[in-house]
Image (cartoon, rainbow, N blue to C red; front, side, top):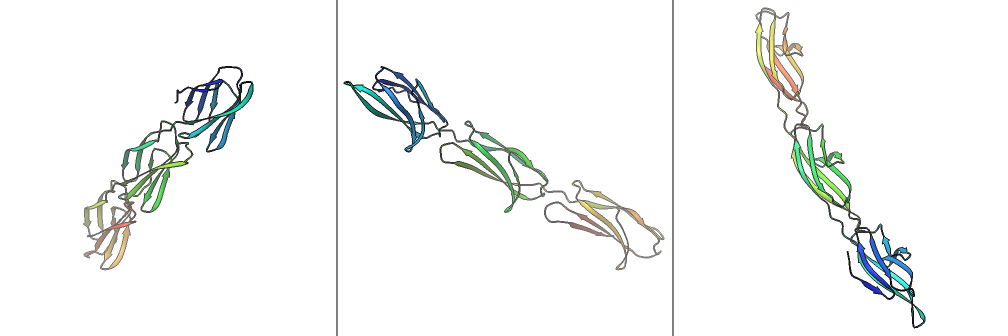
Length: 275
């Protein structure tokens, strides 16, 4: 803001004020012999706006942090003759504050990544926010909020969170971007554990029971298969059951097969136990 006083023959330019998007001229007329012809605003020699005389003249919708030229054209009487004059006044609009953004929290569990960013945008310059998630070079998700979460992710996997914060200071230089990148790894799922509880043979039957611990629900399929030598006799998709109508006094092999998926991108894995 400029408080300097400028005398223009029959006029007094009492005060020049500027904001981030406007220029205000306060005028006082000193006599009746001077008359304004035009009050114009220029940017780099190009006419922006033109106003009629009043005690308060406002040019608005301007660029911030930009130098404008105010042209004051008027006529006045000197020794009985009318003369014309132009006075140029350079005025700068105020600068907008560059916003800032910082990570508040970034957390991962076995299949989600939750984030929160804090921002300071005093002059409301933000135009767009994108938070993207990458697995290697592959973009696997994009959100448009400073606080949200990515879901349905792979466990035990490295990810990169990329924030792009676009803002415009309205200074004629277009949009700017703040970019921040963060590495984070999702937690690992626990492998299932299956242990023998009981395996009992009688004359024509084999009864079995297995106990499992699968806290992350990773088991997809379970098979208990009975073999005689290398020949498959039967297979049961249960952890507890029995094989019937078997040969007496015969050696059999019981094979437990457990298929599980830790959702880590490695696909189905297999546990095999022979008894």
